[in-house]
Length: 393
Ligand SMILES: NC(=O)c1ccc[n+]([C@@H]2O[C@H](COP(=O)([O-])OP(=O)(O)OC[C@H]3O[C@@H](n4cnc5c(N)ncnc54)[C@H](O)[C@@H]3O)[C@@H](O)[C@H]2O)c1
Image 1 (cartoon, rainbow, N blue to C red):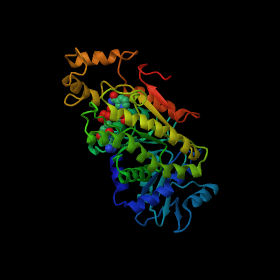
Image 2: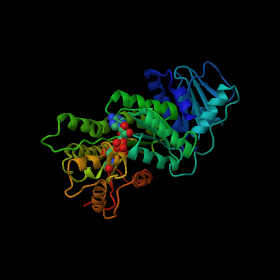
Image 3: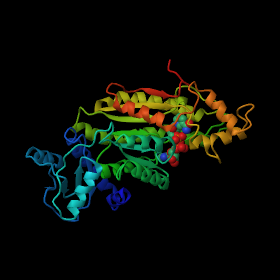
Image 4: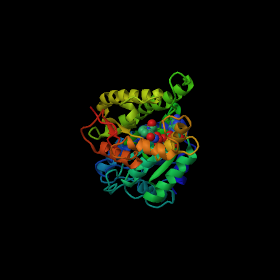
């Protein structure tokens, strides 16, 4: 069901319209924070209609001020009609925003935006996950959706992101997750993807910069192309994502200066200690800790905490266990671990490096993500999630 709403919301929305919506929706949404926890704001085409209970705002009039005036007068409209940015349906939950839109389009009186988002730790929060189609990203999205978050699963692999979002909706509710295409190495793609999320959900509370790739190899033979590929996704991509989410966070902060938002990067234990024959990856991850600390200092002024989680090896995940080109297959072929003759030998070897005796699972990382979101006094930190394999000094 949500897939159809995503499609309806985004079709025919050109860049100019998305930019205009991004100026209005996050502010409208934050206006409701405190009264509904947050609101979801779904933009749609009213097709020239009007309906009882909808607020009409004239061209040139300040939409947010008009909404505030209506709220002060005792009604918090579930639909706002503008002359230049289309219509906005508001609800305490995504489902309630869809209901308000549907009531409006069916010519029924529009319900007021009221009620609470829910009582789970992440209820009411919109979360963007990059590289969310599979692996850690998909697992963290799943766990956070179970904690109440509404998740935008973004990836360069849109078909797989759609499958993941569908699965989350089946498990956690009809509007728990939406899939969108986003290539973190492209400023244009990231900007458009973020604005599409805003057009669909109204804003963003948590940005998880998770997309990451790895091309290992001895430094003497590693091609510059492979080095740059990893650097572009894992390091430059993080910069691009943060650069492009800032305007949305600024807009929200201007309306609710006491509200804290989050940027979290999925870093790695290789961001805290070197990684043999893996310089491009470790270099990007170390560099990203520098970005995290610097972003944290800068963005504190707009109510954003910036932290990283540093997982250990996700030995059961696709990166390691893919039967065709997973790291286990690669390492076996390259004879990387002396004496290891089978995949099982390698799994035993890597499990043996961890005091807790097993690889890192998405739920382990997701729990650290939820911990970070819940903190009021933590920014610029890198939280190891390694079963004791790496301990901070
Ligand atoms: N797998 C591990 O052992 C491990 C350990 C520590 C940290 N990490 C980190 O966790 C994160 C996720 O890794 P994973 O193991 O789940 O990887 P994965 O390969 O299973 O998934 C990565 C996802 O990112 C997507 N992606 C690739 N390039 C992209 C781009 N340019 N823009 C948007 N999406 C893109 C892929 O399509 C894929 O869906 C990465 O940052 C990685 O460095 C992984």
